[in-house]
Image 1 (cartoon, one colour):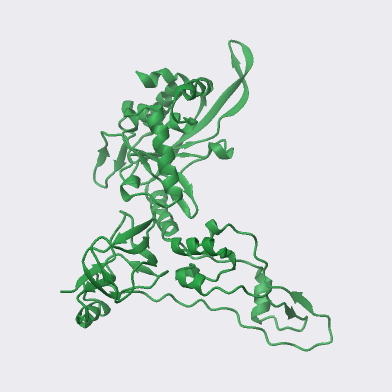
Image 2: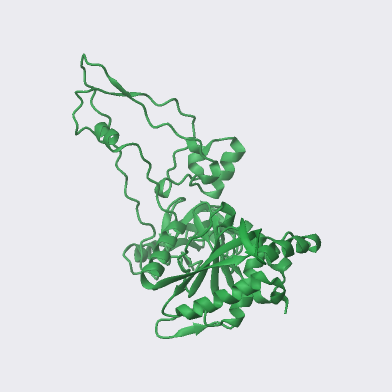
Length: 429
């Protein structure tokens, strides 16, 4: 009997997936565990294996296209098995997923060529926009397409994508032919103002890029957070002189290089242990106070932001945290994080200090009640023992959900965090 495979929910925030690549085609025999397809979620590109033995009888959506969770992804069954009834049930919305197998993407209208105007007046040359140099890594393309382009020495900036929202997929690399230099178009003073070319030159050159699944999710979740949770902010300036000295000593004996961020994560976790009211979340009709401390670490990736989680951070050594942060950050940038790696956070940290940012505020990452924004460590003159000396200072800003955390509670947490960082030995007792 034919086995219906619906688009799975591969993350807690996933509403739709994009098919990055199919590794089997209709008519191929497949075995349980065979790699069937690669699915791009809002967090990562994940391999999806066949759950059954049989023949691939139907593919519900082509490469580069999006498909809602619960929609028909594929059908596996016996050779020449009749699946017309299954297809009919999904096409009319009565299947389990209640959604069509694939939703057509609207065509984006392109401005038509202006009608040539003969005139004795001088023509104004309007060249097609000149493409700027863009790294292949920054271009929207499936992992398979990127690998093929690298192997064949193809610049992805020259490839037109035929996938969803202009995404470059396998067939685009296979069909790629180097194009000639774009022709120069002419616009004369007598060209009507209403012509498509005139409209383009009037509003200036621009580029519109379709939203990735990750960017859609970031927009939705952070909008909900910002406009639902009443944010307030508490900023504190911290003396980091002892952390600078301790980090140098730690790195002389640590098997892995320890960063300032690793120490801040450990200090934050220790402070949360003393302030459980901050390690909490709003649950609608109740507040959840978490007994375990799982720190979400914001990592910038090509298409947005991922927040892998350091679990039980208060019970880990500096070197353990350093090893874990490097591993998770690397997997996040390669979009290879396992779903379990980005769920379960109870508090989040966003650090922009490495970019020279002195101070900023961050939007709370649901379901957390708070997020800590960390600025850079700066050298500046400070007064110690009535003398002016060079000090190391760092500003942190705590964003709080006022439904859960009050001002005095947030301030008390920052006082404890400051004590941990100004006297790092406190973290070890």
